[in-house]
Image (tube, rainbow, N blue to C red; front, side, top):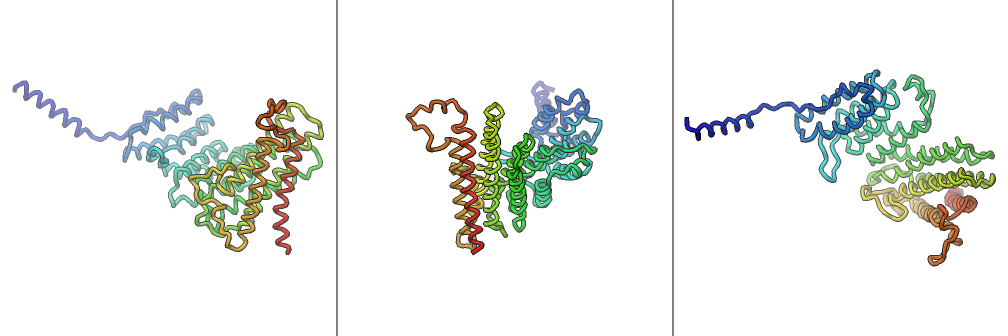
Length: 431
């Protein structure tokens, strides 16, 4: 046989070998057995990151489905093993929530792995699931909500998130989940705020406006809690101030979530009730923060603790203001709109509908008061503001352009103006 024929034969053999090589199922490179070793606990988070990137790179079709199923099975096994250290079990659940059936193209979200959602929902609802794993499951459920939930699962996910959000902390009920170890109120607040992220991602106002109703109910309840604290004749304790901060955070995020919803097809919405909620929240926040400033000024406290208190009060106020504005208009105070939500609450109102015009007027007045208070927090009292050419002097080195007593007076003024908005409505109802 000539050399040319031998070469030709070799070429043909190589082509056949490459073309007809049998398909080999995709194999992940992750060593899950190593995850269970306690000494590797600090490395698991990085291993999980690599798993999600490397094991699934360029794996598609049936091979990807097989690899996803195998990976989820291994992760479930690790999470269920009580002998594995808690951080590793948490990372296993967290990784399950990040499994992707199809990677997103630039500018689009990936398609989350549906079987993982089934697992996460079951794990979250099991009574004996430790709190750390519940929270990992909740984060995964929220991620599925962000990426898009199949219509067959939509209501189940929404109801679970709503139930989590509206549930108040109860040591007697929640402690049973983790061998009677009580869950701190602050930790349960993390659960509730995380649930709000999922509710915001789903965007729906719910059948007969049930999502809106749930959010309003919790905000109103939190406003009443703040009112009760305002009535105290004693100086607020550190614990009470921490409770106030968490209450404002949760109520504000709920108000902000109202601005994330799509009101295109909303039904059975009560514009006056929503307005009442926004008005009541902002007034009670002003009142309780004014009490804290009054407590501090009455003590003559000018210590470092007083400066920290001032900073926290300003943060709480700005959080509430921005959240309420977003809840009303889905814009910031400066008017920047939410491109992803072209149908906010205020824009959905039709002034020719019965009872809507008064609500719109009250919301406009509230927006004006919030803008004025926000300006004060940024610039101080307008009567005492230095001109553009004037040297600010002592104010130049101050973090805020007002002191506690000036802040107290500003909050009293804002509270009275906001209370007037509600009194005008009550006056109409009496007539």
